[in-house]
Image (cartoon, rainbow, N blue to C red):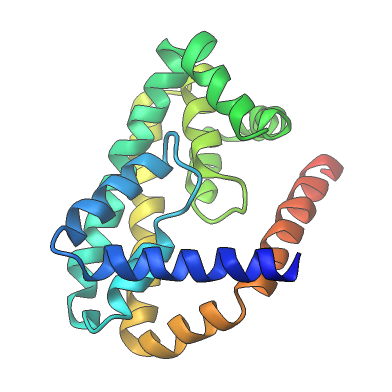
Length: 200
């Protein structure tokens, strides 16, 4: 198990470095940002951090913007999947990533306040695609969805970008060295988040 986790860590690091230093960096970042919001499992934060940690921290505003705008458009795409194609594509994606329980939780918090649910979704451990697809499926107002997504996504990725500008290489080294622990904490965070929502 330890060797398996170490292999994942090494492969993840090598892939991020490859994409971060290639000639098509901005296109990779835009694609992953778009894809994660609708169908891809890995958050673009890792690639953004890899790019800014590879000597391009002075361009943090540019890359943070690319990540944010890509994620917003990806979120709209996810919304359309939920609104128009949930019975086919939407259900398949939810089943593929075993996100059925998250859909139930998201429905409950959407009923409380759609705007704040979408806004806060950018900072929760639950994959963002669950919120985007669910928003379309449950018929959340599209304008509210877009406005909340813009604020949430830009705030999140500009915070990541600024932190990388200030602490860049130290954070990249920390994430790699403690990848296994951070993954474990992430999983625990998801569990705690769901338990809290169920209590309230």
